[in-house]
Amino acid sequence: MATAGEPVTDSLQPVFGIGDPVFSPAHGLGKVVALERRVVDGVVRDSYVIVIVVEGTDIRLVVPVQGAHAVGLRRPIDRRTAALVLGVFKEQQSAVEGIPWVRQIRHYQQLLHSGSAEEVARVLRDLLRLRLRKELSFGQRRLLDTARRMLVKEMALAFGDTEARVERRFEKALCAGT
Image (cartoon, rainbow, N blue to C red):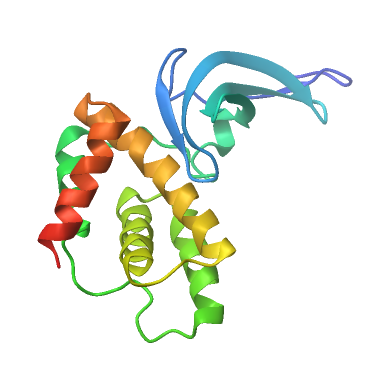
């Protein structure tokens, strides 16, 4: 038991180890580079230090071990799940069918932040199909780029393949669904 003035330990066994790949719904695929112990408001907390590489920029996240589940931090999908995600590109129905365009962007953002590879695939599929019919708005292009970045890296890791080959798999599956 801690005495007066001593920090209280708020410990939980880490689920991820140093070097483990992780997926953050807000940022995409990253890697645990360290486990740190910090005192926050008088409580000792263990935290993951995660580096996410986005377009040549390293984003460094510090996520408390205890809060990792709450922010959606998870292991990347495996090969079997990645094969199922490819099936999303063959689905005919849109994720935003019947929703006014003003709410579509918000709905797509919610799907992206869900942390689900299948939901991210639905956003990517819908926007790729829409791009075939018309030019995308700035907001739609941003969502497309975000969905592509998040999903391609994770699928490439799952398949042990290059990002370019994974994108070709998306296109092939998309054509098979139309």
